[in-house]
Length: 159
Image 1 (cartoon, one colour):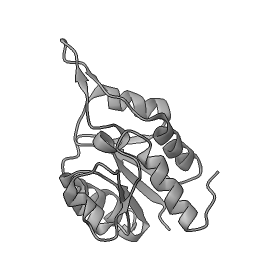
Image 2: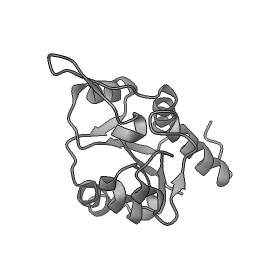
Image 3: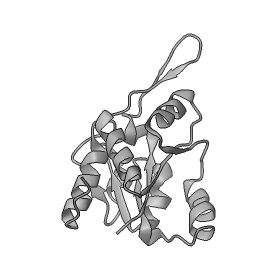
Image 4: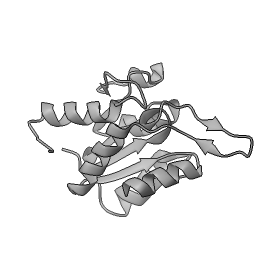
């Protein structure tokens, strides 16, 4: 089973949309259940990382509030994970659950033994062999749904 969880932010923890006010401040809506299950997993000893190519302050603030680790400005997720986790800490792709929704997540989804995506992911992602597709869309409880199904299917009670 996995012990590292990498979860894309925009399109997975959010619906992919964001608002920008006249001053350039960005706002996003995060699903409460998704954030809570990631927090529970972190408290239970799983290494949880939220990963994004953006650098907005609202994502940083939300992760600080939930005490979750955020990897920002990460345009090449595969290279980052490989250099920071696979090589540095002798972690393997067999120990990783990667949850992503877009074309930029495909490399990691194809390498991770445990892979999942929201229902409204890119068709390129939805067609990856072995991917677990949530019954929920991004930003609408897909992470909780994915975690529940993976743990339930493996006979593990996380609560």
